[in-house]
Image 1 (cartoon, rainbow, N blue to C red):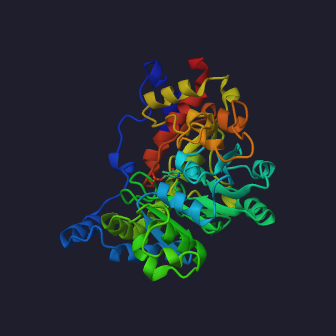
Image 2 (image 1 turned 90 degrees about the vertical axis):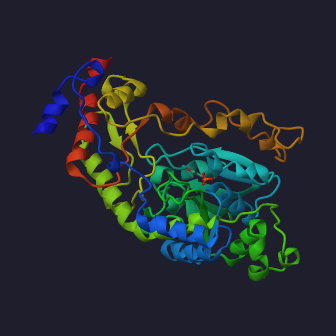
Length: 428
Ligand SMILES: *Cc1c(COP(=O)(O)O)cnc(C)c1O
């Protein structure tokens, strides 16, 4: 077959022909914007309703119905959704929140604005999501909440994590910014915790421009989110006696209204999202099935019979096992795949716990680093504290993020990866 021929040709980085000679731009284009999105956004613009909220309320109701939660609140971005979720869960000065270090910063950093302390836990080397055993080790009497990330679409191990949260009476937050629509054992992520928050930024797997959503079954959390950052709804929504006296002004001193042009696009995106992620899942699984048995390369995806899925496969990665490739450094592997036209890259996050902002910065003038300004001990974590998170950059690489299931094209991309892995010895 022609794929076998591609795999045995000289490597492109050494002067051979490329495995993927030409690219189909729409195979990767995201978001998918049609006339229906354009029409919906234009209607908002022409009606001058950018700052109204009628369409945003419709979007919230539709998103809640799809997510399967009682409430959904649209917000300007995922970062604000996470901050509002943390405040609504009662995170305050000196409280501790356990978070993965390997994530985008907004999973954890909003806790600093609340005077809370971030304690990072390591990740599981297979799922790349927070490791339940390491969560349990880091719980103290001050721990108030756990935040999990379904990293690059891979569902975190919610069974044990929910059990730990219950056993220790901790609030559980899910950051679903990578995993809209992913399933954990048949159930949608974002429905396991007390509250879930998700980015809908223009490049995420659920893209509406700049936007975020917060979902919960708890009326109390819903009201607290409104009280924190949506003053215009306080009169209508607040019933809790500790919130009602402050009706009319936001307790977070923040304004969290979603721009309706984004909400309008969100309604259209939601209509097509399930079918679009089905195509992505078929394509991505096809890619990995073709690579089965390739030395040094392993999929980052749940087992096929687990009932778990990767949602929209945001920022897809593969596991890299250098020992199986004669010790070839991953950077050299990625360069060689890219020379083939294979669309790899170094795309995992840098661990947060080593960044100076979390160790040295006194953001609010407390006379101490903000991370520990109200802590009862120094929780800062240096090099070596989270070995799996720290080593990940040498053990993963980006893979193409297919948006359509086109077997012939996907086979060529898989061949690019296979070609480099099979001929790794020539790069040493
Ligand atoms: C993108 C992202 C966020 C933040 O969302 P914004 O909409 O960009 O504010 C939070 N958490 C994770 C894991 C993300 O990837």
